Length: 161
Image (tube, rainbow, N blue to C red; front, top):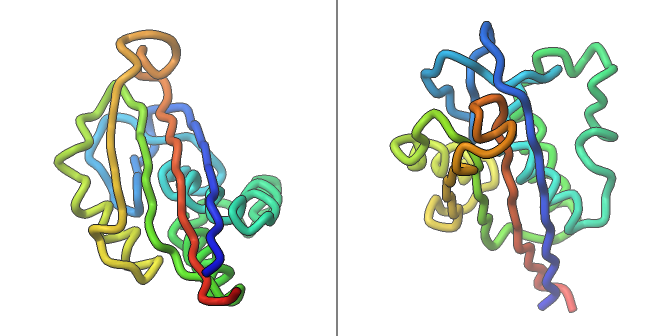
């Protein structure tokens, strides 16, 4: 069995006038993440982890923010493309582990819906999607409620030798 591991990271500013999406789920909050797409930092980090595990270009290269077709793009489409590439390469996603760093809003009440959303796209059981949240203890941009960052790991497995 062949194993590949990937690490992804993303950060976006929080701004008024935008809806907040994390893990393919809309979260009620006074601010949303700024980006050309819907700026779902959790999905972006997971997608980059998958692309990294397969030694492929990151989402910024594959879904450039300067392209008109990425304007307001639903990030679930990015993760779906990553899932398709995994399958095309003869791999499966074994599990995802992600940490969301945000001072606000409180995210744990949304974890199950996020797990279900991510697992549905990756075609894995929801209990194979690990999510955690932490704050930055009021330090820096994230601590002042100006941004949200995410770090994600993925493990890919192949039956090929």
